[in-house]
Length: 166
Image (cartoon, rainbow, N blue to C red):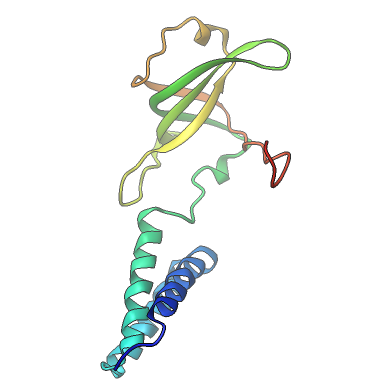
């Protein structure tokens, strides 16, 4: 039996899996997976269900490997935190009042002492940190150094000119 429109079925199952995981959570995603598996086991000759099942599993696995739905820092916005990690890059900048500050790009692996790289790949999260402390400006900063920064966690500003150059 030839499958008509195999790319359509694979793309729909891949996209639906991501949407189900993102909006409904793990439990619903695994319930749908169990439902698809039961459908396939009841009718082993149905190649369309097999194709949908394969791409659904790949998509769910991809979603959980890359931890696409989690905002690790969402619960801490507006509160004082301590972020630890390795410096990837840094820049000395000036704000609108002319005061100098350092912007650190950290590979953050700890937040308030707890590990935040808990996904399957154990990748640290990249965080931009603005340091206004005068003592920080006079220290030697080298990419690769491990640092710990304490301060208030603010959400980055949204685009001020949507759909255009910002």
